[in-house]
Amino acid sequence: MKTWMMVMLCCVGTAFGRPNIIYINADDLGVMDVGFNSSRYHTPHIDRLRAEGMLFTEAYAPAANCAPSRACVMSGQYAPRHGVYTVGNSDRGKSQQRKLVPVRNTLHLNPDNLTLAGALQAGGYKTIHLGKWHLGEDPIRQGFDVNIGGDTSGGPSGGGYFSPFKSGPMKPFSDQYPEGTHRVDIFSDQAIRFMRENKEHPFFMHMAYYSVHTRLEAVPEFVDKYEGRPVHAVYASMIEKMDEGIGRILTELETLGLKENTLVLFCSDNGGICKISKQTPFRAGKGSYFEGGIREPLVVRWPGKVAADSTCSVPVIGTDFYPTFLEAAGLPVPKGKVLDGISLLSLLTGQDEFPERMLFWHFPVYLQAYSGVEDDSHDPLYRTRPGSALRFGKWKFHEYFEDGRIELYDLEADIGERNNLASLYPEKARELHAEMKRWRATMEAPVPTELNPKYKPGENKRKKKNQ
Image 1: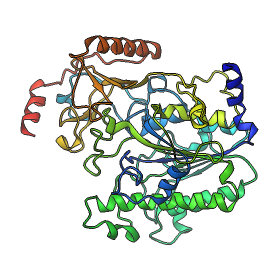
Image 2: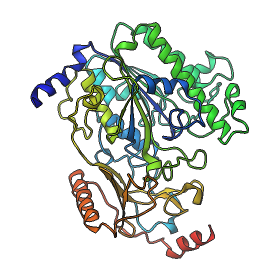
Image 3: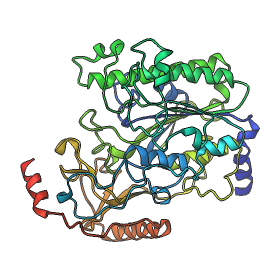
Image 4: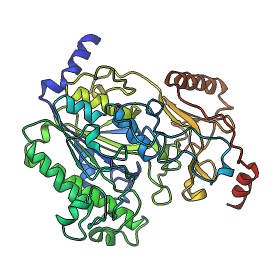
């Protein structure tokens, strides 16, 4: 029975014809920053995807900030396999406040690491990247036929969100669009053009918006409606603009008759920034490995295969996208390619068999604070200090390397991760700690142990006292 089910799942992509795949990746959008999770925001087109597809209520980013999360998704691998642990340098913040010398960070994904786009391209898909790449100089060298706006930039560099653009891959569009044209509109136009040109051919689209990464820039046609409301008006206008762009792409799919044979996945790369948009009931935000930093709004629509208005509460993670897209396309895992995720098709298509597993995060780096106590992290100096975390069932386990601190949370009873149960359930804590160390050994995950000679313990205490 199990063999028959696996054969059926492997044939999903071919039985219905090779589907188009659109992966929509928002930037720094928190799990609570969409309309179906919060009335603060107006996202009718994202909400429509949710109504017509499956919502994963316990979806996770594989890292708490941009580059490592994207590297994990695009490689299908946990961070220790590719070494992208953060953005830029790993020794962020003041040296005298860091007890350890962090692990050296790898800035970009190695071009020899076959991306999910490269695997689909090799399998006959036309591929396009639009927006933020952050994993190398040019996405065309990493599996894409077309690149619109992607380079090493982590934010909307070269002139912000509106044309004209002074530098970078968006600069050529300054001559093609009127002054004041938003990036979202350019991306929508180029996405629609690509779909029209490839409507008779299976395609993969990575629609990776820069929205809503800082710098924050008001969208004139939307910002006024949010003034006076309990929300950051500029931020809300940027979310609605992105949603409008998504709506244009969805409408074009229908116009071209492609809706039924297109899998659309919407997600974000990491949690939102607390000071801009609280992620309550989840704790903290971008850069933290509390739930607010890694929980994501994940929706998948695939008409006829994924039940409309359905919900899945199984914990999933961004490294699952690679095998999911391959299986949907009817393609095998490339020879020699190691994938850490599991295809979600059995969940998407209503099959019951999905293995119980642990999800892991490893972050042997420092990420300095954005806003002190408003970040709602462990201390006002850092969003995170070096450590690891795992999720298994209802349990969330953290370990921090500076002082060996361990934390155990029951997410069913304490979704805000306020009540550390490690001392109350020592056996469970030991069990999960052993699993974490076993995983790190398997991954050859580096753990920083070298003491920082510039560290001044009193500096941490002084700072905390003054907050």
